[in-house]
Length: 108
Length: 121
Image 1 (tube, rainbow over the protein chains, first blue to last red):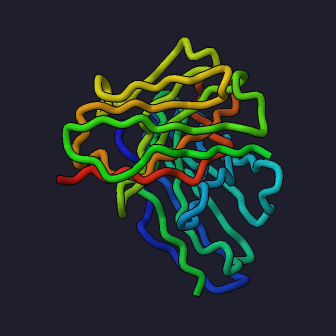
Image 2: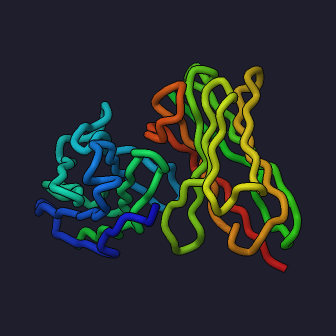
């Protein structure tokens, strides 16, 4: 399976909302609700923030939300905070685990 | 608290071999599948290998099949990744991650901080 497509970068000011897209195909994102998002801070363990397209693990703020339309999944972060500056990766776990190329989020 | 601590990385020469370890604590290790994911410098995440909770089922990315072997120790609660015939493109941070289920789903709810493997002559 090919990697999922994400924009390489995104940015927003504190308090604003930002949406990161993740485009796949009907064989992965479009065909199943097995989409997750991970947050990576340099030197730290990656963190699961969204699974099954829209669900949040315990402890993840409700500022983080996920959605899907057709072959594209999206992660929306509302009320941006400085600590949200990180790399974000989408993944499809329908069959072979496939990741997007990652999006570097900058909080201005 | 779930803790995953990788070790075994370092600077190695092409053609060499290594064994990565991931010591697990804070959960019932034998009840969960485990996965290795790697991240080459400046690049994205790449799934490498997964193993079921029993160790009876293993899965590999095509790019590593035949050179990588995943295993687990039920007593020591440790996950392993053995690599032979190292290549420069194996250079990466290697993360171990816990699955949400006994069978391999590759939904990974806890990750370690990773261990860096550098392959260069």
